[in-house]
Image (cartoon, rainbow, N blue to C red; front, side, top):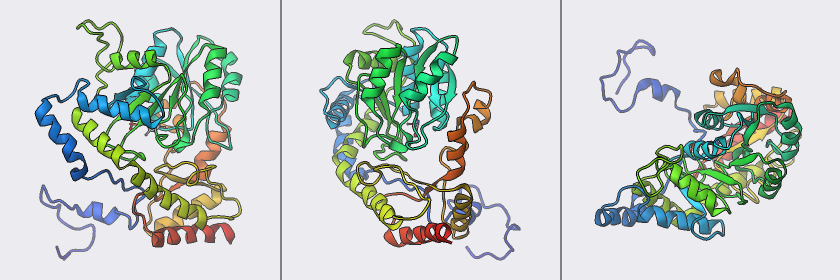
Length: 390
Ligand SMILES: *Cc1c(COP(=O)(O)O)cnc(C)c1O
């Protein structure tokens, strides 16, 4: 459609026009994320089976198969995974379980995505924000042990977060739970690739933006099958064989359609991982040996994620953000200013948060998605290199 009027003076487009001029004007040349899930043809055999089973939800055969294969992915027998319709509901159900045992607060790092706090609030707990380790960006048992005695009114649970998929020390958190009696729920939403599973429940997201995506979905995993039975009941209104709600829960189930896509995604997992590995590995090499630049330890080598964040001095990050913006290359401060920077969470109780505040100013997410080509990564890396070396 030819533009005959100056920008800003156009008449509104007719309702239903697919491409909106204001979207086109803002769409970056290189997006920050551009998920690619399995194609319909890969999911079709699984989807077709639904016509025959006439089972559409409520723990159908595709869901059972999906749970079994997810457990096997982490070296576990069936019965160690419960699917959920997103990681936020998985965290909520795990925290409902913790809340039922008493206590008012849920300890969590301020350096996380908003979902962690929403889940605790939905479970009737008050998030209590603590700081993270400057090297790994994660809450550690040491930080938690120091914070615990300063919190009165009881701590029902603690939610360590795997920042952007970084592997957490599951054994150390199991030991923390044994020592303190505080229920540990791991938010490993972005951790599908690198998660190690302990007795404490871990929750993984299968959102489209995560490394194994099915649109919306997630799962809860633990070495303790009794915990999984509890979560599965909570995901079905707290029912236990009868129609009596014996536990607090919600509708946290996935449909058979989601499970079909999940099975197809697992069939293609190796390819999906390799595609992220080629982007992350290329970035790592292109940005090697830059002064003042940090990338999460092992990312792109030992473990994969769907996001690529850099850490550099505050002034350099501002400059990189501005230069890339001028080149119409999108970036994202994925976790904003930390949880306490959100309007909904600004009054939550918290410990001093100097590391979180520094990370909010010194980290930036760069474009990362399957199919991002090396020309684009070269261009982005050249901007980062120029800012950090001049
Ligand atoms: C993505 C993410 C979530 C939310 O996952 P959903 O499946 O979208 O609910 C929670 N916590 C963290 C750390 C995340 O990165």
